[in-house]
Length: 191
Ligand code: ADP
Image (tube, rainbow, N blue to C red; front, side, top):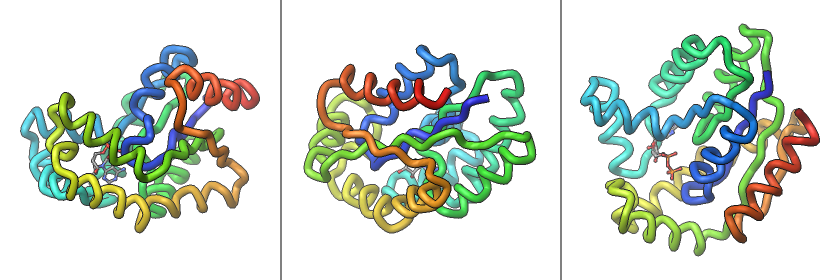
């Protein structure tokens, strides 16, 4: 199995690049944002609980997302590998993921971290808000809150994987195809 974390702040292009990477490498896409939005659409108890955090631009509690990922790993035993998108987002989530993978005699192959300037992030998210229908993209204050959560809680996740020499920074500005090729080059070196 080859497991990959696509990392970066909100608006760095993780979703866009994930869609292309899963096609090229046959990986199973696990996006906690998508999983949470699906719970909200189905009006489950988990979705209702998560929505109040997401609408404020705050992270959903660790135990909720870790539980979701644990189930998804169990439900997809026969895949070539996982592409984690938007997870792990805290150090506790990173530790939990390592433990879950270890139980399955697996590990993270590489973390590819998309680097995008703050100004560009806000521009992209405001623009996405015009068409995405996502309530958390509609309000600049919520966008700023998400970026603050990223700095306060999520950036440390890269430091965790740096200890194991698993982090590669990728320039996240340029054309979608240029960024995709840069990501593929790193994966091809490791797969
Ligand atoms: P973005 O990265 O553009 O903010 P996502 O779809 O990844 O979009 O996440 C949307 C929201 O879902 C986040 O602001 C957060 O509230 C919640 N969320 C997603 N993934 C996680 C996670 N791993 N831990 C906690 N909250 C999460």
